[in-house]
Length: 141
Image (cartoon, rainbow, N blue to C red; front, side, top):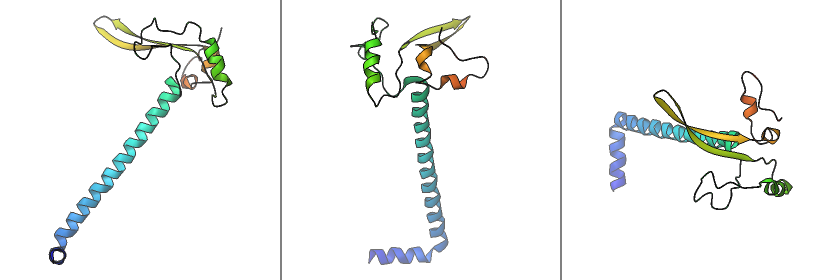
């Protein structure tokens, strides 16, 4: 009975019903597009971060995640890198030394991220050398 009454009301006010249906359809289509757009942006951010900065995996000294200070570095990362490179799933591995600092000039100051790399092995891990517009990428030696 209630469904029959609702259906009769929809047919009686066709113009109002069509406007409402169109508004809902446009809203759903817009929301779907925006969700897909945001998912694409997130996927691109993760890809860029992985390709240019972090890589797919990090190996840190014990306790670094709890207290990420400059004193928590791996003293000799060579053997750890050698073991990682033996894994067939690892395409490339390189050591990095990362830190943060405060750069200031006059009255302005900005936080900066410092990344020390090994130029001989860095090109196998990141695409940063492809972003050089003028000059040359960092080279070993």
